[in-house]
Length: 160
Image 1 (cartoon, rainbow, N blue to C red):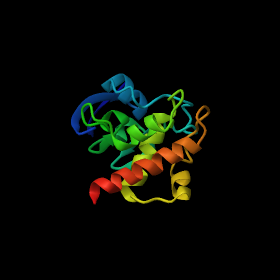
Image 2: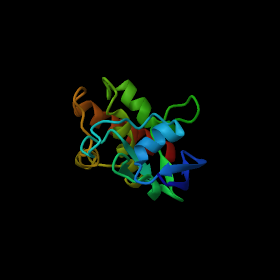
Image 3: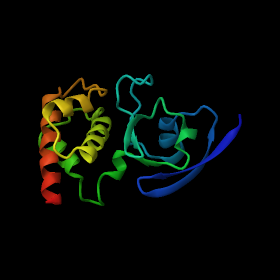
């Protein structure tokens, strides 16, 4: 099989590796780079647990060809915290019961981060729309939505 060299920025660090033609970004991140934070869920783009940000936009990494990451910036939940200091979204999920089993959490966090980067004061309806591609079977959506609203308020407080 032909291998293709790719370079991209992953959570602020330059990354270069060879990928098999047709490899998806999820497998490349998990097996090729060792970033296990994007989770494998359905493998068909319907659950959202593999969501990563590519140039700030949410993408389903199970459906994204690794080769398309060339020259782009990719962010996973491993890039949210600043050392031991959790990102406000991570804190809000933890403190407000936004996660139970935690399997959907990486995708939810990345979808929420993309929303809050564009809209620091989203309505409840905008949050629902932003996470609509992410399935949660344990927590339900109310604690997740509440956590995102709380994090939005905290992030706005930092900027002011």
